Amino acid sequence: MREQPLVPEPEFASYYGRPILKPPVWKQPDVPMYLFLGGLAGASALLAEGAAMSGRPALERVARIGAASGAAFGTVALVHDLGRPERFLNMLRVIKLTSPLSVGSWVLAPFSGLATAALASNLTGRLPVLGRLAGLGAGALGPALATYTAALITNTAVPAWHEAFQEMPWIFAGSGASAAGGLGMLGAPVDQAGPARRLAVIGAALELGGSELAIRRLGMLAEPYREGKPGMLMKTARALTAGSAAVALLGGRSRVLSGLAGAGLLVSSAITRFGIFGAGVASAKDPKYTVVPQRERLRRREAVGAAQG
Amino acid sequence: MSNSLAGRLDDVAGDAGYHDHPPRMGFFTDTSICIGCKACEVACKEWNQVPEDGISLSGMSYDNSLMLGADTWRHVAFVEKTVPTEPAITGVDQAADGLQWLMASDVCKHCTHAACLDVCPTGSLFRTEFGTVVVQEDICNGCGYCVPACPYGVIDQREDDGRVFKCTLCYDRLSVGEEPACAKACPTDSIQFGELSELRQRAEHRVAELHDKGVDVARLYGQDPDDGVGGDGAFFLLLDDAEVYGLPPDPVVTTRDLPAMWRHVGMAALGLVGAGIAAFIGRPR
Ligand code: SF4
Image 1 (cartoon, rainbow over the protein chains, first blue to last red):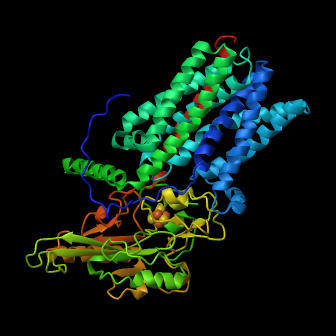
Image 2 (cartoon, helix red, strand yellow):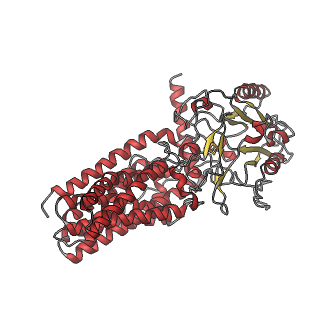
Image 3 (cartoon, chains in turn brown, red):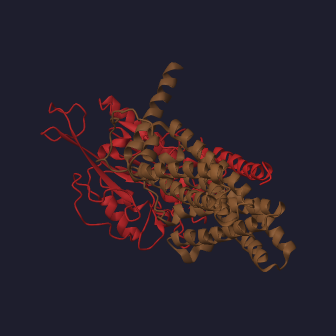
């Protein structure tokens, strides 16, 4: 870890130190878990198609399991998070481009169906053509499923999320790819796991690079990603991602090391989501992160206004 | 569904698809004449049958309801400020011991560009013909997305119920030509209800009047149709910086950036496809 320069706590006024924003009411572990599972499922669907096309049946099987079960458990987590789970179908009452949750529901629903159909056909050997078509459909929707969740959390007033909206989709794409690759390495024999390994390493690089860029750009709003429990999670995830990716690169042809690295990447992808989720909540709870950047914005606008006369 | 995401918007009900609609209605809360009686809080609860929100003392001056929430649709804030003991230079009532109270009745802002409404995936939150923002409780499925989306921290989930609740600007009363319960109950007319365009003019006059009296600290909050939320349907006259009252100094509707967000999501999704392809071309194994 680099040494962080000590910055004096900024002075700011507040109403008895109380938060201005309402922190997300989304539950833990439901929603961070959903972010993880969506990434795993979406990227797995992509991996499954590649495996099918390049004749790697064992990798295809694992990836199809990842896509279908990730979507299924993700849906359960999402529905469980609702205040009125019995009304979950109201999500599909309308389609609203201004609501990433609405768009996401319309991606998740068909994705789940297609990924499940593709897996069923793969497991039973029945209707192979339809199964492959379903797999193709899931593969086409997968990248959207893995990345829309970035818009879901950044399209809020939560300062540490919103201000990171440029990098978050890349972090989520990377995290999803490293999870899917990790699952492939864990479940497929090494002679078929090559693409999983490469996907995992590219994903890890995207996730680490994206996070680093965000942290550098965010200034004060990077604090919640560094401090407290979310900071610890982020640090752990970073080390585990980098370490596992290195093992995958160097020792990926050993069955044992490949499995270990794969498991490490799966776990670190999940930890990343919990860290990001926690950092957002922390930034909403502290009025500092609402007031100071907004004051700064006002001050700059006034300076520009004054300069223009 | 609203068509525009940010910026100035003069006909908000029209933008939401109403052809024939009444003028936009709103609140002007002039905090310089608020006496902190909480009649608005009580009237709101009575009329809207809002459950009890904790009968306890907070230790924050006379504030007992702490903040707006699912069960608090009007919230009276009490700010205690120490001020010089000389005779009133502000023109505002001062206690002799150098303590000045700032009292303000906060409420949902009924934003021109309402993030809560934009992000609602079920269409439960909607724009009324009066330009206000209301939750349809029979549709809300408790996804909670509106809660962190609101830049003012207004709307919240009722835990035992699962759904979200907030001020409706007394939609039921407006529909029959009545004014909202809080405005009706306010004994000093600190809460004024009316046509937004008319309220904005009235507020400009009031600020000018206070400035003439030497109350330089008077300022309007949320009246500017060019601000980050396109102006509030419920705006305020304040006597200090917004954050002193627990209000954000420069709120911006999150969906202003949504087109850029979708662009980044699209690029990252394509990037993921690229990563997938790269993983399979590389070396054979
Ligand atoms: S203040 Fe919050 S709850 Fe009220 S309309 Fe604006 S975004 Fe919605």
